[in-house]
Length: 363
Image (tube, rainbow, N blue to C red):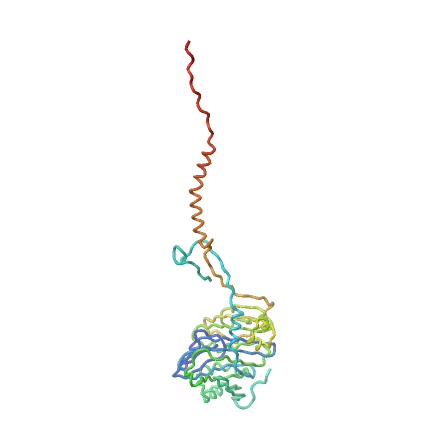
């Protein structure tokens, strides 16, 4: 989970949703408004593509992410997330209601409302730099560490202000012989401070299981949300909730990137069809997070799409159906008695005229 640090304490971004930790200098502020993540796994290799949207007054920051094996890092394509949002977009269905509601005439307005396996770290030095490169606005260092204290010291010596709490939180990863990607966000001079949507990063590493690091999220001070696209051969699901509410599927379906086409998705998946699963999860108490997400294939590749219902007032010829019904009822109330009267009059029998009295003749 991404978190922001200020004066040594963790401050949760408004839309935290991922893995790693964001670190800034004690005299600076930065908030991660949003992180969009997509993970792919082909049974041997895992990829994580992330894009951050940040704001604040910090000119530099560091982002630390643990990975189970040695990782390669490169710039990603922002178009990937535009394509995934289009794929997983909810379907709108219209529902009609008969009687007017609060926003309908005569109560209110006009009336529509929207309803509801690489090698592990080398032995020897506590911290081993396995690679460092400049990628656009990012200074990326790939580290292997056998001692959390040494990891924190190295990061601090290289410009990363790592609080003690975060150093302690990294201990389980060090014990599992995980490595780290330490990214220094260093914008160009003309950018000034870190604001807006940053270029996405694409990490790739060997893995015999699909894992999404979440353990650092327990340091967050406020509730957290996870929004994750999983790209694999089958529909995927987390093995457990790891201390949050049950994960929810927002979308699940097989996608062929060549058909649309989805060029950015094809570049990540190797131009092969892939099953896309969009997962949402809420963590009301981050301190209960007790591990990393392990994702597994579901029993069946059942497709799913979120449906958003749009409720609208039922109309006929542009007029509210309820009003036409009432007017029709009123007409019937008046017309039926009149028709009955007319009908009764038409059925009234015609009587013959009374006989004319004729007096008898006089004799």
